[in-house]
Image 1: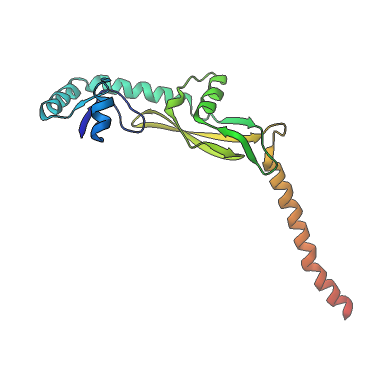
Image 2: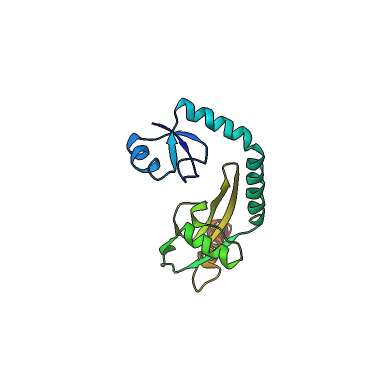
Length: 182
């Protein structure tokens, strides 16, 4: 079923987009709630005329979205969470968690505008904030272990440092025994 969206619906499309959806979803949810109309030929003509008349308004909406996105340039989020010994989180870091951390920094953004998969391990990730269909911003998200600000990163560096010196003397040892034998 082809419909015209009357508002942005995350995961489906943006206002004034023509999209295909399953008939039941369109008839039972989108149309009765006023979020969409059937894309008949007359509705498509009306949409085209409205888009012509609203071109300057759409440009302002795009400019506003770019201004909001500019607030997020250079912003990164650090989340501390309880972690097991293997580096797996107790729970997960979600878009709501990222929105809360941004609010602490004075940047209000709806959690529904943040797209990311749930994070279940310590490390560095990226979340995407969508302000407009043409304006998207990547937000770096760093998950740290609670109680240890350096988190598992420090443990990984320590393990790498321990492994490297162990290998080097092992290679030198056979050479030293050969020299001693001569």
